Image (tube, rainbow, N blue to C red; front, side, top):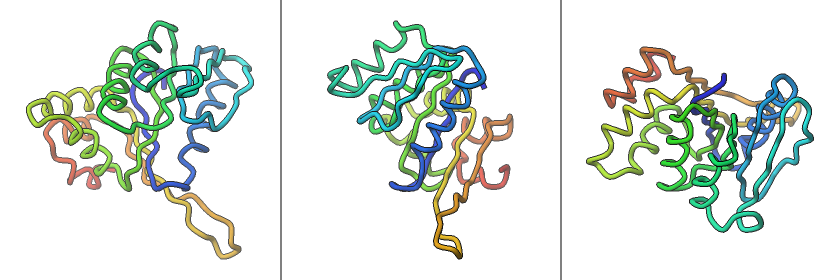
Length: 185
């Protein structure tokens, strides 16, 4: 995947950051990209392999999410990791960055793909929601909703719901029919 929005979702403590780190490491091992991470705090420190990785920490390297996300495009990244989409400002920036041809990897505290879409859209004023559904339908590439559940031996095992944005998914998002997403997964 070279561009678009990829969301890792689930409750706190269920491996979202670890999954993002694994994705960054995979890109780093296989492709020569410029990766910029913006986190609060930095959770994993990456060693450059094939990629150049610039890590930014909120408050240490930048004053706010808004400033960091507005300035990230000046760094000419191929991949942008946003530690968490927390609010209107970070969600709007993530969509814009993804729309402009970059790969955006981020997390959100939701429990399913349909809830994720609804949460993103509902952050915007009602008069903007149709436009946001359109933007999201075009820029979304995947949602991985994950939970870690205990196995018989006491370890934790990932259980995932994976939504890949195909034409049917894009149409349901655009039309506001997120309740039907489970039918096309």
